[in-house]
Amino acid sequence: MAFDLNSLQPLLLSLAIALTAFALFLSRHKKLLLCHRSKKQLPPGELGFPWIGETLDFYKAQKNNKMYQQFVQPRIQKYGKTFKTKLMGSPTVVVSGAEANKFFLSNEFKLVVSSWPSSSVQLMGSDSIMEKQGEAHRHIRGIIATSLSNSGLESMVPKICQTVESHFEAHWKGQDIISLYRKTRVLTFTIVLECMMGIEVKPNMLGVFERVLEGAFSLPLNFPGSVFWRAKKARKEIEKMLLTIVRQKREEIESQQSVGGEGGVLIFRLIMALIRDEMTEKEVVDNVVLLVFAAHDTTSFAIAMTFRMLAHHPDCYSRLLQEHVEIQKNKKPGEFLALEDIKKMNYTWQVARESMRLFPPIFGSFRKAIVDIEYDGYIIPKGWKVLWTAYGTHYESEYFEDPLSFNPSRFEEPIQPYAYLPFGGGPRQCAGYQLAKLNILILIHLVVTQYDWSLVNPEEPILVDPLPFPSQGMPIRISPKLQ
Image 1 (cartoon, rainbow, N blue to C red):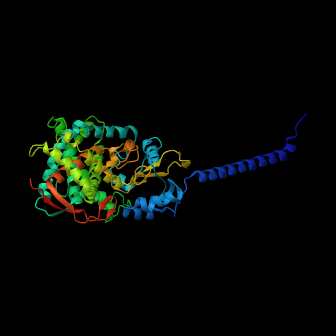
Image 2 (cartoon, one colour):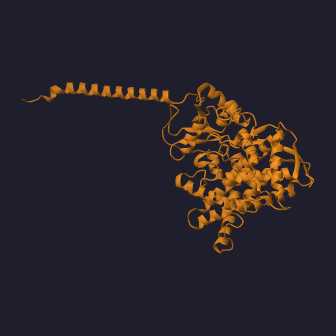
Image 3 (cartoon, rainbow, N blue to C red):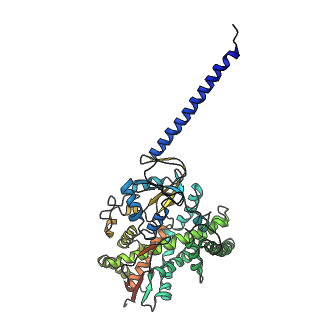
């Protein structure tokens, strides 16, 4: 029996049209389902205006040092601990709580990667540890960690003591009032360069570094006269200077004029990696720049806030002072502290930790989702930003009883992991944490054993631009103790 294909054409055409219509229906229905599902699973919150989102509210709260109280907490009360917003053009999910901190910070390189503004990357360095991922990050972090091992710290303690004593002689002696925060910035800058890097601090060097920092969170608009343009210009000055120093030190090491990290254990290890072709000159320079900023600015603020809280709590100061008097009794006149002395400063470190809980040197940081992430019953789409904040646990009674009160003794007991994060956490926890601890404890010891002091303005406001700082530089009255 023969088939008449011509007679089947209308039927085939109708079938094709029906199948096409059904396919379009399924496609549209699937998109509607996916769209509905996506909307349903995205965290609650508001994306705000196009591009700008809620950026202005965010910056306003940050500048007033009220990030948690004015921006985060009201949205937690409205939406819960996981909410969406839009900041600086990027859809962003803000998370709070120790569990959230642990989930996102411990999944670095797996679910999220560090995400810094373009201006920060350009000024700190695209080849610095803050931009490295995976094995490259672990390699640089290993070099830093080895430099700050027990043996490295032991050799650094007397160097830091000597640097602080020289600083007192140059900047404190004969003064009735000094700006503690500003002077400490000079001191911590000198310590990280001279004691850790073996680089001599020259006049105006700090000013050049601070011009770079001013542009680190600015809009990356590189036209003459802009903040970013001035910062880029300063960055080129620093790069030229550091390249000269790195090449000179490499020659000294290769000719065996400098061995074993003399004059700067970290710079020695970085240059040894350069000699072994494990790093480039640019990587060495970028990491030196980043570490100088990371080590000196946040540490200065932590020191200032520790003295602020001691001034507000004389009972805590009396107990702390007694701890240092006991340590000083076992030292000969003119003898520097040793690492073993630092380990005895238990209560002092509790005071410093509690001060950093109430006044964290960093408010938190951004991550970027590299895959779709399921968290807290929601979907965080690939490419979205994630923001964790230290305040999201530091100020919560769930983790700290009576969280707004100053109570150093709370650190006598173990703190829940990822609830206390003044230096971050996970693979990207501040690599210079141990150096910061040394700086804080040594300076406190030498100040309280050599000077009587008091705050000029106990209620001095704290501002943020882009990092927190005492608005008046924290002036203190000082007078040498009678020996």
